[in-house]
Image (cartoon, rainbow, N blue to C red; front, top):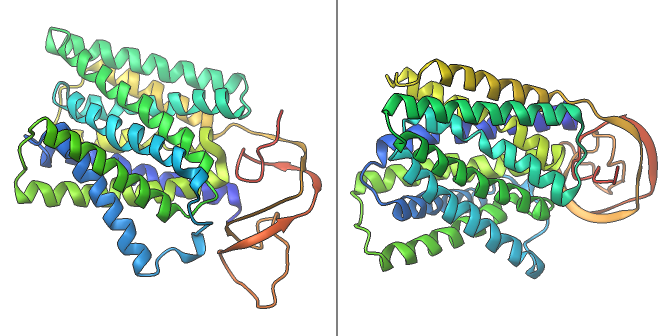
Length: 351
């Protein structure tokens, strides 16, 4: 499997793991304060990856240890992605249907693409613009359907809160590109621990009640899989696809959550929601299939990240033979060639 195909698979796995979380948060976290919910989700995420690292899982996918210069990025990811975004999601879930909220998470695709283009100059063409328009149209139709279904603006307000959450997760995704060469287990552990600490302090200050033990354990389990393991796999996909394209494929997640809620009996969605979902699907399909190939130059560089020797960009030699993925500091000489590629770890050249 080449690097691009593997990136697509990894992004899909991350999407499935995260997509399942929204309905379960609504079902198992009912009555738990928004800040407490966010805290428990990221306690689970940090604990899960820490246990995985202690067990020796993921050594081949590791990169360099977090450095002092990564601190600002980790703090930004924790504040935006582990504190503000999940709180807004929980508040939105209390005001709209689970199906609609799940589908509204497609806003994360839109914001991730726009931010990746704006701040990292990731390449985009007319096809990307068409995909963005389709996703925007889907969001408008979804909001209208919720207002019609409830007879007032409460459903739309809930969706706006969920969309606001996706903006902060989009910022989180964009920031994560700055630490894409670092160990993903370390990144998730640091982000989760800091985000849990922030939300816990605020929850205690505001006097949120402690949840039941069953809800506590359930939310921690959801966090370990849908926020911890999912983010580790997402970061690995981002190394291969770049921020915008990984975010596009990650757009599968809302459909997973909406399908699960619909299968569980939520039938409030109307025909506008169905059309909106189709618009989301079209937008994501356009982004996932965007072709990109041209002559490009790899400047000499020395860095550390998980890699393989059969990916066309790592032909250095070892005294001992390595098979499969492994990580160590290595150098790349200058190379000029042409092949299809995404704005991955080795293709962040200007256009």
